[in-house]
Every structure is written in structure tokens, then in C-alpha cells.
Amino acid sequence: MFLSEAGARPQAGEANASERRKWVKVFKACDEHNKGYLSREDFKVAIVMLFGYKPSKIEADAVMSSVNPNTSGVSLEGFLSAVKRKKEARLYRNEIRQIFTAFDVHYRGFLTLEDFKRAFSRVAPKLPARTVLEVFSSCF
Image (tube, rainbow, N blue to C red; front, side, top):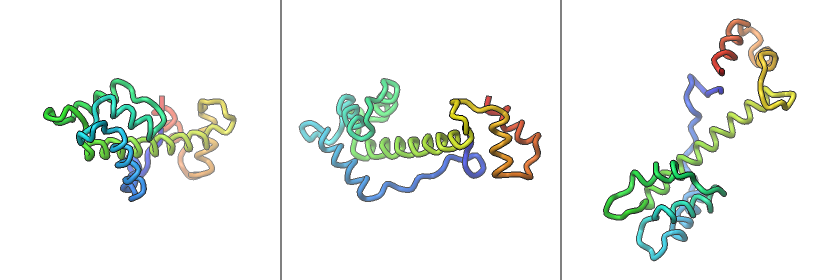
């Protein structure tokens, strides 16, 4: 896996106004009885609406562990924060997938040392072969 600048995850920008409005709209649509928070089930439905999949129990537990005990659910701000983190994680995974695909020129679904050597010779031709081998080895 390759990371951006100095090993840090790429920083996604703040959600734009259109995205935020969409997230608020989904929150309100899933907030049955306008109670001001999403129950565990409401939260799962909202994630399905936004990302197209049902969150795992672990994912739901992680979000629900941060809820206010007086409301038994996720507030709008908590929901927006969780959705923003999910969006950033998805962007990061997509970047990794693109890098992998660029290295996997034979579409085998795995990378060989030769794939690494070929890719690094194109993007960093003066990089020592030893460094390429160390990078390859660190991935496994």
C-alpha cells in the first residue's frame, strides 16, 4: 500500500454544500417521528441510502458508542461527522485501488517484484534497486 506525502492519508476537502444538504436530507428522512436523532436501525437505513450497503454490526456499534445516553441515538452533527469520515475513507480506498491497478498491468490481481520494478523505473528511474526491493518486501 502506498501513502501520500510522508506516509499520511490524503486529506479530502470539507463536504461541499450540496453534499451536506444531501446528508441532512437523508438524516431527516430517516429520523422517524422527528426526534432529532437516528436510532441504530435509522442509522443503518441512512447509510444504505447514501453508500448503497448495510453497515456491519461493528461499524454500527462504533457510531452508536458515541451517542448521548439521553437520546439513545446519533445526533445530526454525529451523523454528519460519521458520513464525512466514511466519504474520506472511500476516497482513500479508491486512490489505493487506482495505484494498484497502475502497477498490475497484466490484470492478475496481485503484484510481483517485476511489476514493482517496471513501475518504479518509469516514475523514479534513479531510485536504487535496493529501495524498490525494500518497498516491495514491506508490503508483505
